[in-house]
Length: 187
Image (cartoon, rainbow, N blue to C red; front, side, top):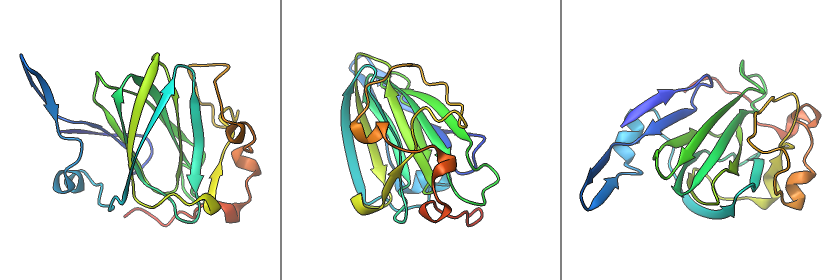
């Protein structure tokens, strides 16, 4: 497994080893000891799968409190995935990392607690899988408008398909600090 550091501390891209032959291929999507060696030490307690069609954009979502770390990957199709540092006091507050994840490149992205997350489907359909470090908590969920100009995300769509909730989120600068996680230093 190859671990690629990003410009946001704690956010890593993982390229699992893919073993293939004439029958197809095999890869390990999670092994606690191997991922701990890669710096991902959190305990995952919930797995989720979502299915979306081309042009659907989900995000940018977060929870506070009850921040969720997420290990994300694509089982079918391709997505443009985004993580945004929203930790008050972090040197990289408001910065983002973008990655193309697909069933063919097998890459995963680890998004630690304290980050907002979103993705856009770039293939006809996508089956997206993610492990979470905390349970979904509707009462603590929040979001940032997908096209916040201060974030400068180069989304591959200009007119995405959005949920009503995702169209009504504020810009990051308009979210009160007590509604965002605090930076606690590197682990």
